[in-house]
Image 1: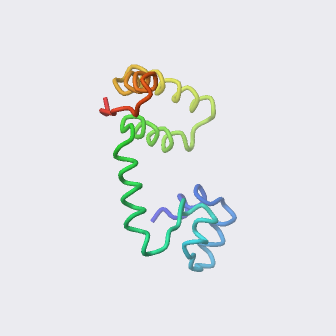
Image 2: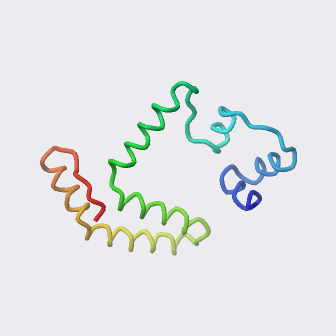
Length: 118
């Protein structure tokens, strides 16, 4: 359910029409080529690649990540002016966060930030 809504937003209307009407299978490389996947790894590399990605996300700025995710989904169907306004508000709020202060402190000290998600 929702394929006719979601797929054109991921791969464009023409490609989505082709995929849904013809029902052809798409392999991993094909999925990456049309934007359905962002990366492809060999089967034996999958556990390591997944762990590395999970670690990178877990070690990153959770507050900024979650805000970005909200902006991406909410702005999908917004007018540009409304989206820019929403992003400006989000940035203003993030600039008041502990993580923002930590980022600047860590940058000036030449170290990696210790994110708290606050």
